[in-house]
Length: 267
Length: 197
Image 1 (cartoon, rainbow over the protein chains, first blue to last red):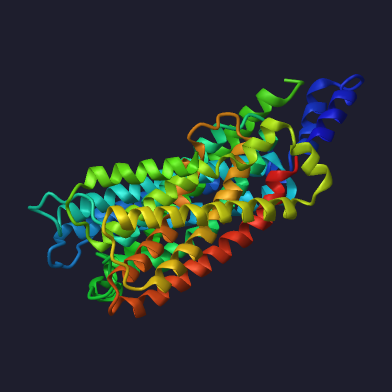
Image 2 (tube, rainbow over the protein chains, first blue to last red; image 1 turned 90 degrees about the vertical axis):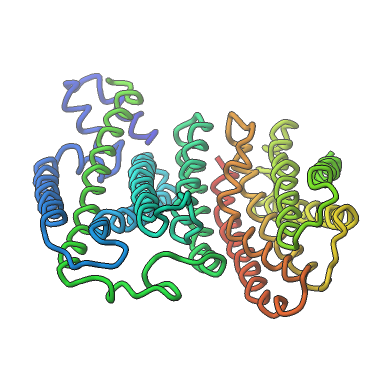
């Protein structure tokens, strides 16, 4: 990072400014950023369009295809296509974020920090969506006629805890001023949180009963889903993870440009 | 100062609860809430104090990071065990606590404190680096400790009520021990990145 800046400051005297800037960006920022911002823009657009078409088809199928009648759930069973993929997508985002935090500690590269932050932000967004769809779904099926909005379902508790951890992660980032220090220390917190959360998988189900399929006394997932539902459900998971990828890469590129504008002495 | 905090918060609970008898579950929950808040208030200063007195550089130059971490961890653990004992004795007197299984209760207190001290020590090093330190430690600490809190409250409740719950509490003790081990291992590995610039 710092050596790259120094060479660009020296090299600017006898070379035309624009190519020099481009050349030295390649030195300053590691390869992933140059991929995203310059070379792969066409491929990015292609994949984004595929994801959008794919997800539109999933949405159409989710609302138009006939589904078998299920007790209590009736037509709200279609929420399966939205609620469950949100949870999967958040898990994927948590892994991406933790991976890039690990890379921050290995390489000290600020680009990795931007990636970890944006994955956490988009992951938190999907976590909120999964939580809200879950709360509304259970309120109007199992808890219809009662005043219960929040129940201590294990997965609901785990998502809310993951959101709390990301809230703390964002607060911690706000309290650190120097970008390099912020990258390193936020990565330490993100990884430390990632080592404690797996315990929840083991601890919480012992403490609370679950509404979800496969838990004690509940039918397994395969028993309550008709093949036609699985035909939409699995593509929906792929589609929403693709949506995560689109939002995430978009935010990373924006953040990189912002980082460059504010930190590059030549701009 | 820390012990005054423990005493005053315990008195506060005693006055708030009043003459009513409190269930075992609530007793162990309140006990652990007091310990958790004491830890987040008392142990958060361990690295901030070094920064304020200007001794950080001396330590960074002369002592390996792992030794600094071990020293802070041991000090925090001893402090936390003292807090445990004070809280337990005062709590038992104020709320008429009946302890059925002393060994299980002490085990869960000690093992839980090890995990609590491990997590708090690393996070105290983190907040010493932050500019706005205010209530940062509880915000960072509490979400990480939920698995530990659930297990220790279950184990302490089993110790208070005795009977059948005791055999079931072995699983909780194993979880606490595993959590403490993993937290301390991760904290030792990650501490170097916080400690050195």
